Amino acid sequence: MSNAFAVRRNEDRMAMQLAVYVSGHQQHPGVETSLTEDISPHGARVRTKREWRADEHLVLAALRGSFQSLARVAYCKSREGEEGFVVGVEFVRPEGHWTRK
Image (cartoon, rainbow, N blue to C red; front, side, top):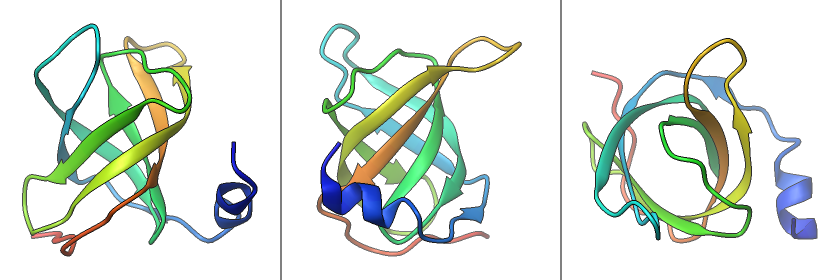
């Protein structure tokens, strides 16, 4: 993990479930529809069905609003008691805005 991201991860995150598209997986191409758990100006925690490796890149795009970004995977952990994973991502090239409605 880069030092810059380690510093940014200490910033406040807003718990927010927003629908997103996740794509860019090397072994499982295609687009997955998922939810964020929290977001900040520099990253997010996202639920996913696929397991990702640290430092892989993915594309994250909001279903509503104009937000999209190339993102770097900081970590990927199994969801306790549930199927799937949670992925912490650092936004590399964020564009647009999140919309709740």
